[in-house]
Image 1 (cartoon, rainbow, N blue to C red):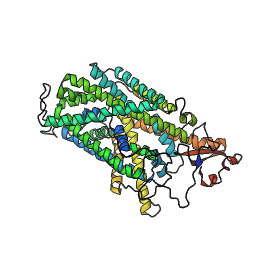
Image 2 (cartoon, rainbow, N blue to C red):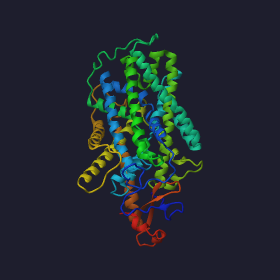
Image 3 (cartoon, rainbow, N blue to C red):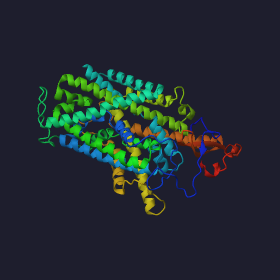
Length: 551
């Protein structure tokens, strides 16, 4: 519910939920019932679509652009590969936790649903803070910058303060316009570009095998012997480890992407049980092979200094200068596909928050006008991305964006894992029932909680001499900005839920309704404390008894 926008009557296209007496709801599972009523829309996503929904979201610019940073922070080839393995294990534990929650709560919405289920009080606090987290972060900005850098490399131009950002702004603007004006055209383009992503990583993998077997005979290539003494170099520091892990986990952002669309998946538990591990394991193996290929082809000194164009350097050493330029174009297209996918999703998340009444001026953000698309949600994310691209000082934009996405995501993951641990504790005490069809297991949840907590605390460790996150920004800036974003959510909650109802002499009443699109959402009523407008709920005999009153 927004500051200025309250629903006052029940829409004829929405029905109030009538909960079963025993508290169990219908489920999309193949064994245990879900804890909520599932969405009643048409189910169109199957095993293959769900698998590629995750692959297309995870496989962005990360594996092409973070290898140099991870190697520099790790200190050696062997340690860098260990960082990739450790980050993969952390991300896998997170996937298993989200699979458990998704099987218990099989609706569209992802972590928002899980946070609201795990933390019901204070009412709307977690909703307001999550809304701030989604609203103020430029998720598509990082890969927009990578597109610019690879295009400039292909053109043989030096990357300056503004040329890569200018291209990045053009990329995010195009992605916004095509998704806002014609959804089908945007999806077709994103899916077509997505072919490049899979093709490139598979080609790099095979080339790495050929290099290790001595099969590359070009003038640029000489055996690197990077694996002869893989752990020679400097010892990793605490600062280096945590920032290496951040870069690895950045490459897996999106492993829970199928959870956002569970309401549209046929038999969500069965599909989730197969599609999620398939997509993750496939990419996990490919990521490791790609990094082995980098070390097999590119000298260590070149890797350390290649920055975010490591993939282009790989093709230069393997196939020559012309191949480097061609590969730069392909990687740029890969990153562009990810931008298209991310802004597509984020625009719909903003629109959904507006439909639920979680944002100020909710009706404005909920509208599908003028093109029958989430134009306003897409426009909002475009503005945030533009600010995120332009604001950081030169040389720091990409790393700042990467950390500003990864750090709050680890905060959310820590809170979710901690909440799930508390559910397990309450189940042990016999206070609640918790038997989801898919179970991560207690050790996995504890590991994910501790790993995510470490990734929250460790960024405050100061860097040692020679290591740095940014060129000009303080090393802790992304953590401070993150808490500021969550702080805005808290202030919004105080004003929305406490201050305005107090001075307006009304009470907020929340109720779930199902829209004509078949998706469940909250509907929030503003009831006068003197009962003068109580009749707005009398059309539904169960509205007051079933409604959750916000106090």
